[in-house]
Image (cartoon, rainbow over all chains, first blue to last red; front, side, top):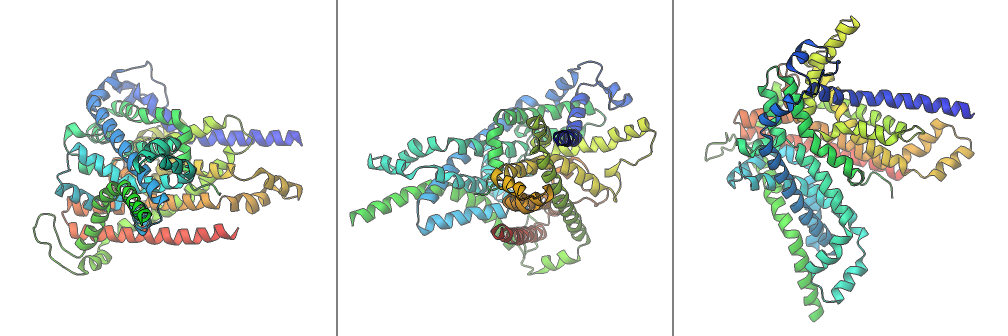
Length: 277
Length: 293
């Protein structure tokens, strides 16, 4: 009986290894390519390892991606949009959860429409509104666009966390004479920290990787995000794939590190509603 | 009397917390939605000051336009294949990672990593894999398999489905995994005592308990696949020919590149209608099964 169970475990283990190779090999190939010389790339087998750790490709990629600018742009857009989203969604969802008036019920349904009608389906019109408001090729415009495309999910997510905030605590604060705003910042925000962490990570990852909307909002070179400049690099490089591969590693690294450090919150945000009860 | 005014004043303060989001959302989503609807009845080219009303012409044109039909056909095929394959693969992998194997978190991270990169990058990586990595395998093995999946109209869909699955299976797997881990152990133990075998346990206990996760994954994969664009930009660019032009790419080509904003808006409205319809049907059908258990 025990032997049979061990045999089964080994079989399952082998299956898992086999399956994960499908996901891992392309990643390894990219990393291996990113260190190869142009000659190795064109002449050698794709499966051979690089003969030495060539950092030349990375130097080229940093230069061609204009990494200093694109990285700080992406960081700025992501950080600003995510912080404002956290503030708006936390406060909004709390107010919606605490009040029974029609206005708040309406506001919730209004925001939920945005989950069913995604921003990508309306990209032309969002671009046109941005154009009318002179928000194209402006940092503020890009940040606003990201806030709008994330706000529905944010409201929905923060709303589902509101039952973790004890109402008694809020009432106590109010009896002590706290205004609504002070109650929110002093009582609600500290309790919602895990919810905020989840929201921030989920949104950062989406904004960091977004392409369609930002490529419409940004045409000026100095405003580009990493993903946009990576795509520009892909379409302009003819045979210099090693530089492209180094660029991939560079643009994927920050978000991968963030994920590995904050996996717990990430998974929590993804699985909201997936678990019964 | 005083209490009521206090309550009203508080409601006002709460409303101030909601308003900034509400205004931004109205400007950025609701006005565009109304614009799409009203422009879809015009022949606006994006430049003219006047938008000429053409009634339902754009919608009638949609049904006669071969490019639109092909774009829908590609998008629907891509969506159906993804929904079926990704759900099954994600559930199977989640079951593997929920079993007695070792180093679970390592495998979980490996399978999840592709989700972290931009679809632009995923598209380019698979372009290289089909273009130069796999053909080199032919030389090593001495075989002559056609790996250039993006090169012909017949295989481009398969190639894209593989690339899309490579990227997203890990995401849905994590959701199934969370669902699996929430299945109470006592239930499975009780079934074992009653003499249920592994298949029975899976069908009668695990699967019904997974219903909320299945709902999320099915709806998420379907609506996500219908919106495919980024993956195509860096890999096939909609080709060869128009064989892999998705509906969003067709909207882009029509409105932005072709300057037919009215016609493009009609396409947007049909896409939104389809997204809403599918989400409602799926939610209704799947939620019904959730209640039944």
